[in-house]
Image (cartoon, rainbow, N blue to C red; front, side, top):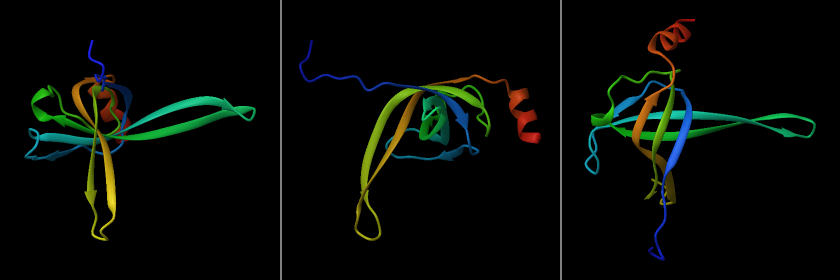
Length: 118
């Protein structure tokens, strides 16, 4: 195939930690943005170690067929996107996010609303 080709594909399953926000963007379509937390455990020093990772997700609103809420468990497919910018102190910063092409709800809406109400 191509000698310089690569694959940029991400598959995540996790929990939405804050209510999603709606953004209008000139580069992409209108976007729904949220933070997704993934969790894994592995053995270390004789006990299980918890590791949490936060991912910043952007989803074109046109591909969502349902509303997203805090505490929902979802499966996200997409690609990694990194952009650089210069902050107010003139320091170069980088922001990495996932541009989703597919989002699947893993918990029912009733379960999510009951968990949020508790």
